[in-house]
Length: 79
Image (cartoon, rainbow, N blue to C red):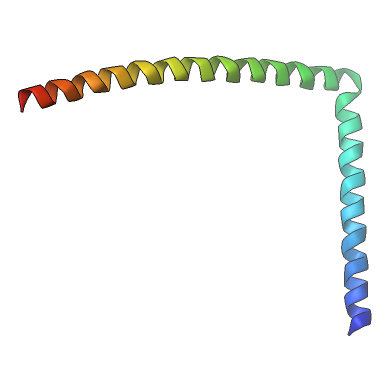
């Protein structure tokens, strides 16, 4: 029983190591060469889009909150 468990743990560890080595190989391939530069450019563009969206949605949220407060005040004043 213990031997079977050790065999299972050994196989699991080998798969983890192979996965980590594969991830390192993928990273080296992605970063090196022209495809790595393209990936970096896309990541920078995506970061810029995210920053713009966060800024836009923050100001939109403030405007919506103001408008909703006005509507609530009008409803309370009418009632």
